[in-house]
Structures are given as C-alpha cells and as structure tokens.
Image 1 (spheres, protein in one colour):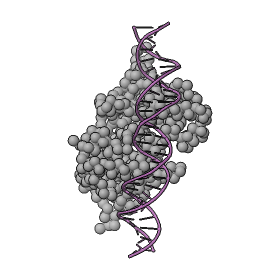
Image 2 (cartoon, chains in turn red, brown, purple, orange; image 1 turned 120 degrees about the horizontal axis):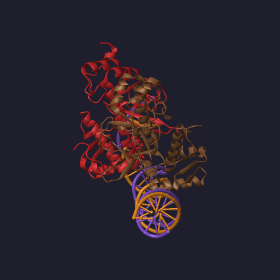
Image 3 (cartoon, protein in one colour; image 1 turned 120 degrees about the vertical axis):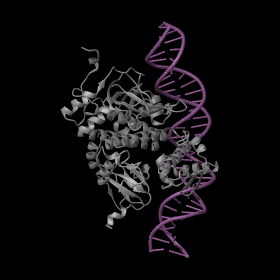
Image 4 (tube, helix red, strand yellow; image 1 turned 90 degrees about the vertical axis):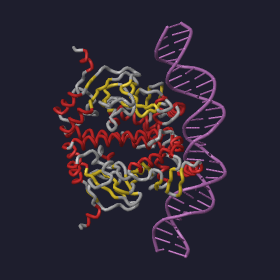
Length: 241
Length: 241
DNA sequence: CAATCTCATTGACATAAATCAATGACTGAC
DNA sequence: GTCAGTCATTGATTTATGTCAATGAGATTG
C-alpha cells in the first residue's frame, strides 16, 4: 500500500457525498470529480489549512474533524467567521480575489479533501450538474451568511446561543450523528467571538440554560434535553419537527 | 418608437457594465448576455421587485435608483438585509432554494434589468468568461456578507455608522458619483435596522459625527467633510487613500 | 391651506451585556 | 509528579445602547 493510500476514500465510498460537491452527480460525473480531488495527511489540532492573503488555488471539503475560519485585524484581534463540520465546504469566499480572505485552523485532528478550483471551473463547464451545484452551493452560503447577520445584529445573548446550539444539532443530524448529544469542537472563547459575545456571557447563558433544564453541559459535551424550550429561547421555528 | 423601447439601454451602451454581469466579457459575449436581459418599466418608490417565498426565476441588476432587501419575521418585524445601488446585482441568494428568500422594495424610482437565471445557467456553460464571472460575483457576495458579520457582531454604534457611510461613499465613487456628497436613499429606521441599532442611536451618532466635524447631515443629504476622521471612527483602513 | 402622517431629533431612564477580578479545573511539558 | 498555562465559571461593577416619551419638521392629501 502506497503511503498516500492511507488517506484515500473515493467520493463514491464517502459517506458524506450527499452533502458535498458530488451531490446530484451521476456515477460517471462523480468519478470525474473524484479524479481531481487531492487527499492529504490529516491536519493536527492547531494546524492551519490556509491563511489570509495566501494564493487561492483550491477550496476544501471536510471529511472528519472541525475547522475554525477566522481573521486577525490590525490590532491583532481574532475574529471568528465560522466553523466547518464534516461534509461542508470552505474557501469559496476567496474565488473573487484569488487570495484567501480568511484563515482556517483545525480545532481537532481533521481530514480534508482538497479540490483545485481551476479544475472545477473547467469541469463545471462540461458537467452541467456540477455547475448547477456550484451555483447552489455558493448561493446557499450567501443565504446562510444573511441569516447569521440577523442573528448577530438583532438577537440577545440567549437567542444567539440557543440558535447556535440548534444549528449545530441540525448539522450533526444531517451528518447522521446524534442531534441531542454532541461535543463542541471549539472553545467558549471561539463561540463568544463568533456570536459577538464575551466569554463570560457565553458561560453564564450556558449555566442558565442548564438550570432551566434546556441542556446539560459538561465541558465540551452538550446534551439537548428540551429542544422545544431551546427553540423558544432562540425564537426560531423548530428546525426539525 | 415601441412602448418598451423607452426603457431599453443595451449592455454595450450601459455606463454600469463594468460593475455588472457583462464585466470581462468580449463584445460578442456581451451581446449574447444582452439578448436574454429583460428591461421593464421602472419601479415606483415602495413597489416590490419580488417578495419572500415567490418562485425564483430571475435575478436583477439595478440600472438606477435604490433597492432595500428585507425579511418579515413571525412577529411581523422587518429585518433589513441590505441595500442595492446602480450596477449591483440582487437575488442570487435564491438560487439554492429556487424561491426568493427575501423581499426587495424600491426606495425610490428604480430601473431594473431582469436576468433570467436559467438562461444565464445555459449561457455560462458555453461562455467560460461568464461562468467565471458568476463564480466571482457569488464569491464576492459571500466575502462582503462576512465583513458585515464582523461589523454587526463586534463593533460599536459609531464604528457601524462610520463604516456604513464610508462603504456608501466608496460605492458611489465606483459608480462615478461624488464620494463626498450624496443622498441617503433609505430612512434612518432602515439604517438602524440594517446595522442592528435603534433609530435613536443612529440619529445621535449622526449628530455626534456632525458636531465633531466628520460629516454634515441635512435630512437625507450627507457630506463627508473629514474622511480621515471617519476612518478612525470606523477603525478601518482608508478605502481609497 | 389645514389636517394628518411619517420621519428625525433630543432627553430621561432602564437594562443587557461588557469589563474587571478572582478562583478552580484541566492539560501538557519537562 | 509538579508546574505553568489555558480555559471555564462566577461575582461585582460599569457602560453603551435600548426603550419610553415628547416635540418639531416635512411631506402628502383632501
């Protein structure tokens, strides 16, 4: 077995392909996409996948683990842009400038598929399904970012954290993982930074939600005990009824 | 002259084509795009271009005027998502769901180019430049939304409004309009809603900026007197030095 | 030209969340 | 095993911004 084979899982075999780039492609088309995907050594916790300002050549799909996207401002302050879970794509924000506009760091050991952009551009002219999928993917990210904007601009700390937990829960469920019991891959600081809250506030809301029986938190382990209550807190419709 | 001719300005003639879809296309390609663009009667102030939940068939480019994108939540509260100026594209957030996920309303008399999505999809498989441009356009919107997220999550009222004014200034300049003297097409309420601030706060910050000699406001007319000061307030680099 | 609205501004007061500070629980290095 | 460092929690205090209330300036309509 070649060294690189250790990390190889073809798109066809990959359990996440329904969430990823190959979605809605035929088997043949999927093989074509599979042919351009590079699968490297997993990233260790704290390793960067890419950093702001570097040349954009590829975007990435997460196979396992978790990634934090962030930026550092003039004052050296970090700003967390988002978190990526298995089956999710990141790096598409760099197409326009051809330079990465954010940095991406592994929150835990993380396996990645690297997808060279120029090849996808070429392939997608040929494979109509792929082009349509790329448009949908980009469009979805815009929509999700707009939803986040509403969260950040107009919601209280409880609403932000309630929504954040429900969103994670939903994403885990889509990945065939438990939607009620999961491990937060990021630190409290990261959550606060992402939601525009002080760490202390995150901590306080967590304890408050726990006291009210909505969740059970122990370090990074979270259990959702009362989804309905959490939805009320979040002032959002039940994501999965 | 046919009735519809009153509104017809081809992409070739349009002064905004450098900012719009035809950007980076050859003359021939531009004519092909031009062929699918529909140019209707201008929208009157208050008229909707589309509303949330309706079927998505086209996206739109603004020729003149200004559009507010917004959503109404369960409680009937409006949430302003953004403002579109001449040369800008809107509606791309609906590709993924095939339904509009926001509503768009004219803030003043507004001329629009309607661009049927399915035709662009088809054309862009054929015209590589167009596909590349669409990817860049979508990618840019993601990046801009992420910048807005940082503004909403981590900045003070003064920073938000400073940044908002500088951003408008820059956009007007790109449109060959004055970057120092312009008219806000939206109400204070809309600005506050968009930035996650109470109207009163918007008003107070405007007066404060005026007292400090940064700007001159009179109703919707704004003059930027001290760009440098505004940049300091906004804690952002000079957009155009 | 009133009369009615909507929109903007300003002041007084309330409050959610930030900041400051202290402590404890883990984690990893040597 | 111990020591330093990071991370999480909790309490006390401050503050930026929201909410409530009043007024005035324009715009729109009959």
